[in-house]
Image (cartoon, rainbow, N blue to C red; front, side, top):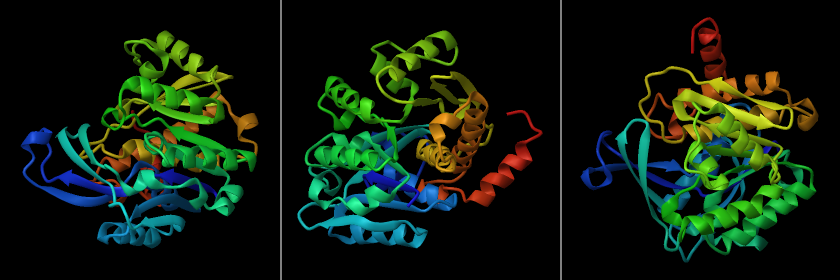
Length: 332
């Protein structure tokens, strides 16, 4: 197996209209989602063998979500059904095409009831990359299960990828979220964050592309806590990377965005699908190679923004390659 993800597989209730706050939305439409599941599907569409570990309710939504992953070719042997909790649901409002508001129906949700003894150890032992996010760290028993999965994959030599994916409504307070994030950093090889999450980790008011020195200092501070590579996404503006050998900014692609929800997950899959090609990825890291990798990842994210929903919008490898070929001579 090339890429295994663990965490939430859920129903995203997308607003029928963009341009309304949560209290103004009159109708929603259900779509499959969940950040780690999105990454697994995106990686599969990009030509990688992928698998998903998690838990859904023993209900119609849970059955539907498994069917979605199966149809996409994602290995679901690590997916469990919970007869005592419903499939988690995320209600989404989009004040504009580049921003979203989330309300999670998850008290409890099946996704955070994954037990450590339900982990498929064979998947974790054979994968080249293991990816997870912070939503599986908000509650027990999924928190312990996630930590155990990280340890098993790391012992087997997998690259460990972590998307902080901070959702304030799912934590008691920012301090709790920070404590749990700090616990994971020494175990993580690749950390993917956005600008707000960098600020949270570093205890500063903000970071921005405009202050490149401040961004370098902040990401350098995070590197000192464990990760080999820190990648910061800035939405349509592009991405920034930092590793021991240096850092750099990779501009995004100008597209007519329809829906930016899930573009970060698509970006992550694009990045991991490239890193998994590198037999000795740590030794092969360079500013040039990382710029190439993040250009590819930026393209995957940009293409995802051109359609509504997440899984339904994720591009295939030939679409990404065609997009890059067409944009090669254009200014981004």
